[in-house]
Image 1 (cartoon, rainbow, N blue to C red):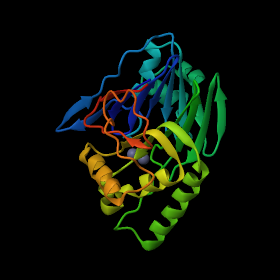
Image 2 (image 1 turned 60 degrees about the vertical axis):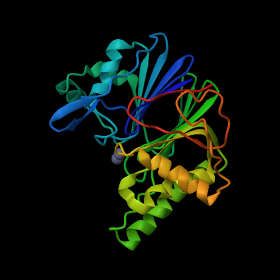
Image 3 (image 1 turned 90 degrees about the horizontal axis):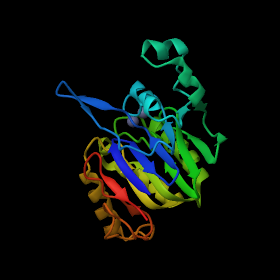
Image 4 (image 1 turned 135 degrees about the vertical axis):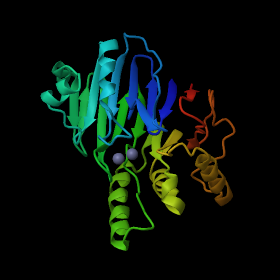
Length: 267
Ligand SMILES: [Zn+2]
Ligand SMILES: [Zn+2]
């Protein structure tokens, strides 16, 4: 399996017969120029499964539908807040026929599509988080489901947030994923790791990909250093948590993303 980190919370997972594309959007304005991240090219025989957790601009834009022009075998799984009328699609240059290739999924739902099993959690932000089981492998993509603790918020807000996040992540108790994509957001200051810590306390994954880092990738190392110092049993230091992690089998291997478009080759 090849996992490509695209940008922010965007990942592509290439499997033998399927491509899973999570929260991919095509660019960000920076110094008045549009930056964009090209996708790898895939075998057109593979089924492309596009997952959009919610409609916020850092997780979705309309360009994602252009993939349907290139890949005939494609389906879009959209969080329930991504509501696109035929008129809206056509105003944005997307044929309304694409609707046949779209499925909206609400929170805490289960859905089977061909040989793929999908489950959702309710996000603490908007839309959903995805659990995807395909080709005998399990994946978790959080979208913006995170423990959004903010120092400047009221105690009540933070207390409710803790409860809502806990309620959803508790549903994952004991689950194991081949790969999990989980926020680690530096904007939260000292609370940057609350969501990740809670996730790792309840579930586990062969490979954990931190995301939603606003390009501050050094926070991954900061987090790993903190875990090592704490000697936490939920984490073994891994010396292979890098590109070409072919054979690593440690628990909750936290992957070191260093820049957009890093590819990980996983056995
Ligand atoms: Zn969001
Ligand atoms: Zn976001």
